[in-house]
Image (cartoon, rainbow, N blue to C red; front, side, top):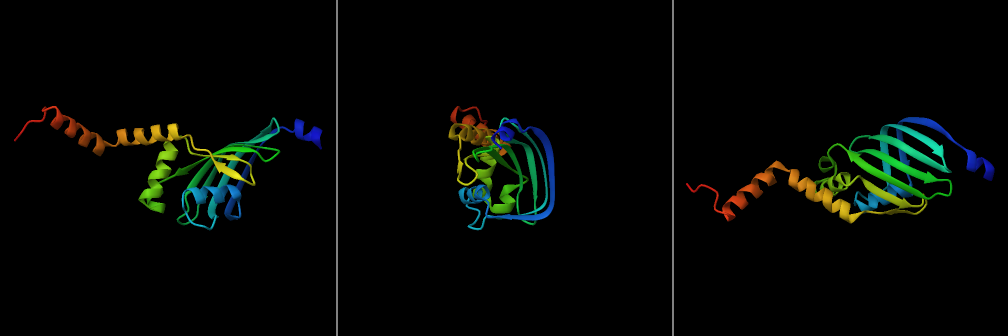
Length: 167
């Protein structure tokens, strides 16, 4: 079996329709960190995945999950090795604020801009591994790109430096 593990290689695709996942440690960690509830149960209308097996790892090229009802649409990318170690990234598609409220939506938006929510550790004991510097850059970039905040900042600077015409 060891020799087969070392030499196994190939590509694959997987598709599922109308399903539910519960009891997944990875999903549980995702829900816990984003305070989405105690129940790590995810219902989906569809899932499509493309993967390859090489170097004793399953490389998840992309895995797109279309959430059912109020569930989020997720994209997961990364790898899991044959010993259960993993490095995955989860990004949330659509408007997370509409799904979970302003606070959680803002956090998810920042994490998406930083490349997604990074999950490391093992399949049985996943850990969130946030690069806070990258997340901060994503948050600052999001703030700087907001047209309302740009206008407000411009107005404040004009007030400070006396460039605004007084009426």
